[in-house]
Length: 121
Image 1 (cartoon, rainbow, N blue to C red):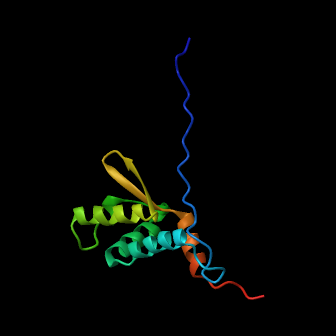
Image 2: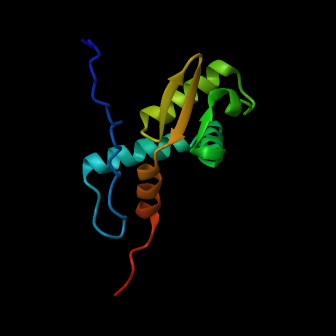
Image 3: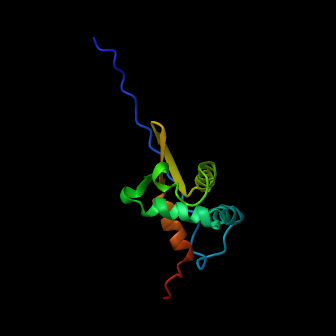
């Protein structure tokens, strides 16, 4: 008799879009806080370069070993990647000794929609 137990797979938590387009309605205090955190994270040139490196990397994800050449030390790269994760812009997964990062597609879509002008009727 087999003692193998099948465990359910855990789905990664989906990141909820930050908010509606700015032209749709005023943001709530909570929406403004979350949106400001995302834009603040991208307001640093090193973070913006790291975010761009991950977003444009083949396959939609990048190993930290492939994106760390942004002119700062490795501990500084790790700090900036942590800030991007905390802002909900990146997700990460450890594989062996390396960490792989990916841009959350829902976040990109929401940020794009936030700044898109609503269609006029």
